[in-house]
Image (cartoon, rainbow, N blue to C red):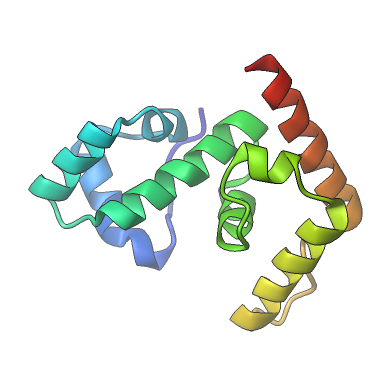
Length: 131
């Protein structure tokens, strides 16, 4: 289980609250229940929306063994679940992630090409059959 490190700036309150709660890796974050998330919201500065986003990213990180940045890119491009990835085409994933990166103005070349998208879809489909 990869450690939770250097979450994006928009999640700094959540990162602090998770650390204080003893959540130190993606697997622990993925396994948090809605009740656990509610407790974190009630006792800290985290928002339920951001914690649920992070839990979704954690699901992709843990189940598909994606880098956190790749999982976040997929989630923000509209592929928030393993089922959504598994039912998509490589072209759809490359188009939507590329569009998101252009909108964000990163200035770098798109990180997702057809080969990477195919690999993610294959892994998502395999994960669906094992669960």
